[in-house]
Length: 498
Image 1: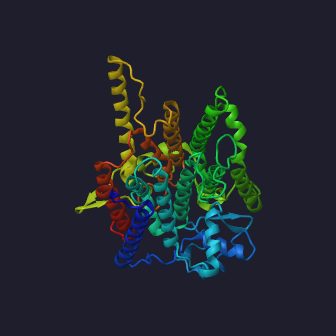
Image 2 (image 1 turned 120 degrees about the vertical axis):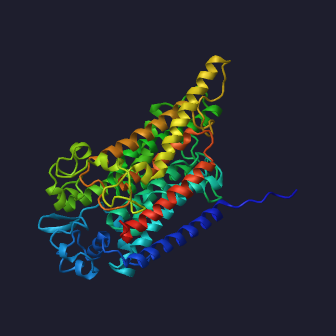
Image 3 (image 1 turned 45 degrees about the vertical axis):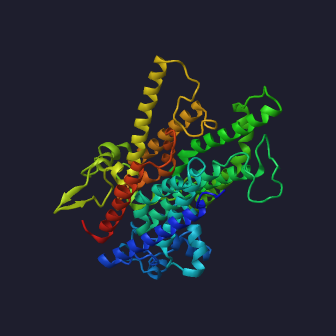
């Protein structure tokens, strides 16, 4: 019998990745041609503090030295007149010296590339590769729950249809950290969703199990999930708020493995919190070790294990209410014309027949990142459908089928899935609220970049659907709204159209 034609997922991902790389190259080339900026794919960026930090690491120092006489001139950074403060590089002033005011994880890449490129590193290519790898791992995550084509669609929607695309074009020091965080968060979701029976790539010891029905290969993957999450925190510290979501996945994995083992050995032994706490140290040691390294690094630089330098930025010291305050979110009161909340809810304007977006501090965030609007509508209509379904069942005979329209209900119990959806909604919106308390609200960029940090975990709201295969309206939103908006906005932002 003739087998139906099929394409392997790796081929689909590779093909879409090449198209994305070509699109990105064309985008940067066009911006460079229109604006005269050196924003082509392989050009260095003058805003890469991580390259300067890597240079100092190779010279055996944690600080940035006297930047004006050393790294600053060598890197040919564009804004030489800001030598005293360097607000565009976010250089902290502490103890009479200059310091990188960011967590150190993105500097590791710059450290490894320094022998080959020095401080003139291809920042845009690096930033885009972070984004591309993140899209690939988001696709691999969704592949466990839907078809290959839909998995690739959702994975690339998360990255290419959001502000992560625009910030990768510029790839300043702030933006490199965001794209790297997206990559690690996607890798964490992919690793933590590994089934307990995963056998690994090697054929040997396929039946070797760690504890309670979990293969060693799966257990290692789950450890790596928490390592990836810890590295994401080392890029964007507020990503720590998403730890409960990873713990939910770990709970689900251990419960499934324990129940499978129980069915054959001890039918009366149910999986409880005690079992989960007993297993937790097997997965917590790695992120705790990474956190200890972070604290040692912070203490060596600033004498405080929780201080990575942002509090010593000149602009933060001059902020009227400090770095974070609820006043920035709702009233400002520091001379700004709009509160942070008003800025992320304002709409773009039409001037001279052209759609004009704000260049600073964002605009209406469901428009800036259309995936937010799509997921909100998914939750709204999914909730309405669930309520209607329950009312219908109350009027008819009882049913034993799952009450929630969720994929793979044999794995996702109803109450566990409700907990996941609540955790996702609460953690992502707590993070977004905290970002509104920040004095800068994102600064100079296209879109609402602070909210883009939530996208990898916000994508989990798709699980309220019975089937997360991409529908025609999902595809239309991506190709006719999200992707064109990101391309147009990025070109207008950097080419000076408004």
